[in-house]
Structure formats: C-alpha cells, structure tokens
Length: 271
Image (cartoon, rainbow, N blue to C red; front, side, top):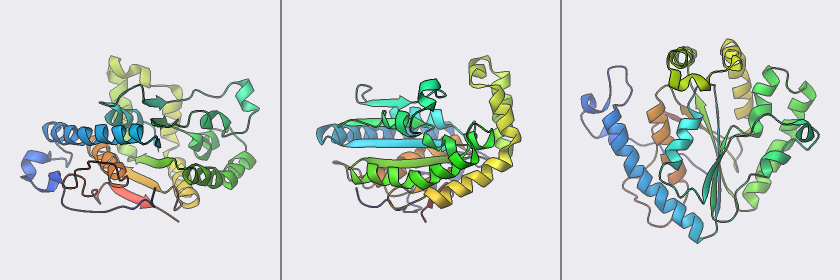
C-alpha cells in the first residue's frame, strides 16, 4: 500500500445541495441525507471487500477515541453490508492473569487479519497510551516502553503487506457529558454505561494530553493517525469511510463519489 494521504475537497455531497436540506440548525447533517450518502458508500465498501477477498489482501482498521465518541457505531457503519465470514470486529476484554504475563502486544496480534479478511479493532494496544495510564492499570515504565515498541510493531505489519488504518474519534467535553446523560435516560443504552465512564469523564483533560502525545509519538508515515471530529457522529462515520476508500486502489472505485474528505472533520497526524 502506498503512503496514506488526506485529500480535502468541497466536492462532497453535503456541499452540493441546498444547505437547509442537508444541515440542521446546529450544524449536524440531517438523517435523510446521511442515510442516502451512507448507502452510496456501502456499495463501495462491498466492492472493497470483494477486492480484498479476490486478492488475498489483509485489512486492519483500529478505532480509538474518547469514551462515548462512537467507536462501535462507526465499526457498524463499515460492517453493515460486508460478508461477516470475511469481516469481523474485535473488542478484547481486560487481560486475564495469563495474558498479563505475556508480551503486551501478543493477545492483540493473534487477532490480525488472515488473507482475504477485514478486521476492525474496537480499542486496541493503544489502551496503554491512554486509559491504562490514566487509571494506573500500567506503570509509567510500561507506558514509556510501549512507545519504544509500538512504531516498530506497526511498521512490521505494514511491511508485511497489511493495509493498516488508525482512526481516532474526538469529541468535546460537552458532547461527552450529553451522551452519558442520554445513556442514563435510555434503557436500551444502559448496558453501555459503567463506573469507568464516569471516571473517564472526570479525566477528560488528562485524556486530551495523552491523546496529543499519542499523535506525536505514533503518527508515522507507515501508520498515521486519522483524527475525526465526532461531535456529529454521522459526519464522522461517512468521512472515516471516505478516508479509507480514498487510500486503497480497489477495483471498480467510483472516482466521482470518492473524491476526498471534509477538512472540518478530518485531520491527519504524521510526524
């Protein structure tokens, strides 16, 4: 895979129509517009998966971000129409006693894609860059050792031919608070809440510092960070799909549809 790049453009559906039909008063996109644009992108994702399968490619996509930023729903966006036999989502639980004695990356690397497969990580080894550091689940020495190794690990993955993408969903403190309240008030979302969510909300500023450190130390040419402004989940999702599709030369790509991404939503971090 060639080096990832970001192409900012106004040649996007949301800038071609009448703004009042596309954007709400708060600046977020309307559901009807989102569903229409999302469906067009789904056709492209199906083409991409066929290309991955036919050519024995391996595609690994990591999703990181603030709590309640929409990591799981973004993965569902990608997975909506893919063949589940060749596409899977990985959300590892906390390590057990045996795994705690292993090399830190070991349990994650067991999950990397096989030939013809797409794998999405709902959180990843970057737990050590953020949540583990904040709540004392790792030592300072382990945190720093992680940064000594991570770029080498990811370079080996890319060098072996794995198509590797890293997304970070960023939201404001106000948005996070509102989403926590929404989960409190919706019985269908109550399972998403934990004591750690409330603790994380109180540590928002610390997460920001560690996020920026992560971008600075692990946003590399072979594995850059694609940061998505996700206060509007729908705009973040479609731009994540656009970014990934624009960086893979799969067969049958609709070049009129896949023109680039929205500068208001996407920032690429490469050091």
